[in-house]
Length: 264
Image (cartoon, rainbow, N blue to C red; front, side, top):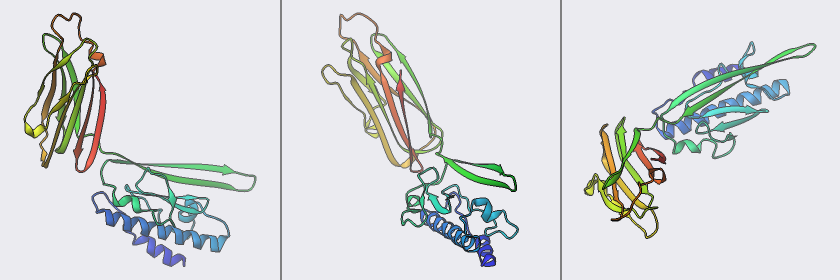
């Protein structure tokens, strides 16, 4: 049985970034099944639940190596095989029908880091070392960097500058202008149908400016300024309080949505 398990572990094809969702799910289930088989073999021969080190660190290991993947992680909890799919989600028992289902909608990308820790326990007669490996996948970096600025005058403005670092298929920007001094809508830029700009100016509330863009053809990396123009009523005195103005943005690249918000 040990030889068979070793052969099975050697031929496992681990999921890699860029494979299809169905392949990731299949790989996850195959890896979890192999670990479950190794656990059952260990319990049958030793009568106790194994740790990761028990399965891979003996003279005749039950597994040549413990499965790892940037898409999912498999861990042992007191002999119970658990799967976190995608990596970073709450682990569930591998026997659950939904154990690897989360990968069907997950997308590859981001940065993967692997941390290995070990704990050594010494008693009067034995020394036991237990090791564990944690794989963490961070989401991809945002496809756009954002800078903001403001200027006052006869017509004041709030500016959000988007600089795309890679192609995006959609983006949106919203700016809310505080109306403590009765500020009112003056204009927006960029205009045109392509960006679907619109604004609302409810009585007594902030003036809201929104730009949206969506296309089947990704927007090439480039800078883009979106500007909200507003004015004070005639005869009004006192500067505009830009600290009361806020903005939010979102952008989609390769199917992954990034977003952010802040104040001027």
